[in-house]
Amino acid sequence: MNNADFEALARVIMGRIFIPLEASGRHVHVTAEQARTLFGHGLTPKRPLSQPGQYLANERVTVMGPKGKFENVAVLGPERKEAQVEISLTDGRTLGVTPPIRPSGSVADSPGCILVGPNGQVGIRQGIIAAQRHIHMTPEDAAQMKVADKQVVKLQVYTSRPLVFEDVLVRVSPDFATFAHLDYDEANACGFASGDLGRIVT
Amino acid sequence: MNNADFEALARVIMGRIFIPLEASGRHVHVTAEQARTLFGHGLTPKRPLSQPGQYLANERVTVMGPKGKFENVAVLGPERKEAQVEISLTDGRTLGVTPPIRPSGSVADSPGCILVGPNGQVGIRQGIIAAQRHIHMTPEDAAQMKVADKQVVKLQVYTSRPLVFEDVLVRVSPDFATFAHLDYDEANACGFASGDLGRIVT
Image (cartoon, rainbow over all chains, first blue to last red; front, top):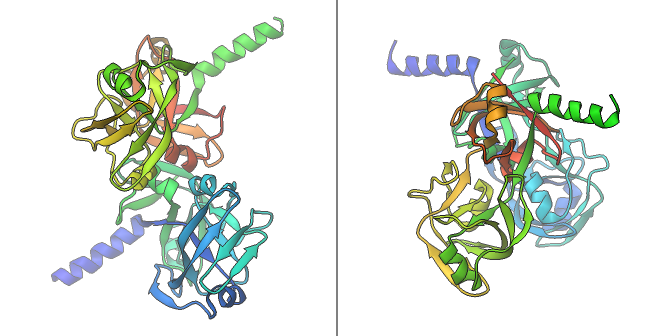
C-alpha cells in the first residue's frame, strides 16, 4: 500500500470506532417569510456546514430577550418551516429566558423572543431551545455502531476534561454526515478542541 | 424509631452513597494586603459557605481582562497568601484570557488581570484559573468511599442532563465538608439544580 492507501484505510478504521465532535454556538433558523422581513430577501450561503446541504448564512440577526440580547448571531440555512433559536443555558441567563432541553424541531411551548435584522424585525412566540446533545449519523455508521434512530446513548469524549455524556440522542438519516454536536456549555465542560473525537460506550 | 430518627438514619445512609453537588460561580480570593488596597479594610463575612470557615464576603470587585470585564464579582474569605480568580472557560472568552484548568492554589504562569474595588485597584501578575472539578471530603467519608487525597475519580451526577465526569480531583481534609464542586459550564452541561447529588463510580 502507498501512503494515500494507508491514509484512506486509517480513516475508515477510525470512522468505525470514533465520532468527530463539533461545538455549536448559538444560532437561529428562520422561515422564508421571516428571512424576507428581516433581510429583504432569502438567506444566502456563506459557507457549508458539516451536515450536507446546511450552511452558515451571510445574514446575521440580533436576538432580544426580556433581560438582554445577543448581536450578530449566526443564521443557518436553508430556511425552515418554523423559527428556532438554539442557545446554551448560559446564554439563557443573559437573555432572561430558560430554554428547555429539546431535540431540534421540538419547540412547542418554548420561550419566544424578538429577532432584529437590517430590514425589519420579527417576534417569535416560541422557538428558543437548548439543543439536546445529539449525534447525526449515516445509516451505514448506525448499522456499524449498532444504534438506531432516536436511540439515547452514552458518548465518551476524548477531550482535555474527559467525561461521558449519558443522554445523547442518535439521529439517523441518509441526509446526515456522522458528527456529534455539543453546545458551548458542554464543549467547555469537557474542554473540547477542534478535531476531538468521541465514542459510543455502553 | 420516630420521624426524627428516620430522618437522621436516612441522612447517614444517603451520605454513605451520595455526594451533594454545588456549582461555584466566578469568584476571587485576595491577600490581606490586597483587601486593604481594594476596600480600605480586611474582608467581612456576609454568609458562610459549605466549607467550614469559608465565607462569602460583603466586599465585591470588578475583574478586568484584556478584552472585557465582570463587575460585582464575589470575593471569598478568609484572605489567602496569594490572589486567585476562579472563572469558567466561558468567562475566559469574555475577559479575553484562557484560564488553565487547575486545582485551587495552583496559579503558576496563569493569566493575570486587574481587580478594582471601591478604595483602589490591584494588578495581579497571575492567578486566573478554571478550577479543576473536585470533591472536598472529610477523612471519614474518604475512608467510607475508599478514596484518598489527590485521587482522581469518576463522578456520576444524577441531574437533568446526566453524565459522568471523569477527571474529578478528591481533596481530603478534616477542615472540609463533603461536597463536589462544579463550575457553571459544568453545571449547565449536566443541568444541575440545587440539591442534586453525585456518586463516585469506577
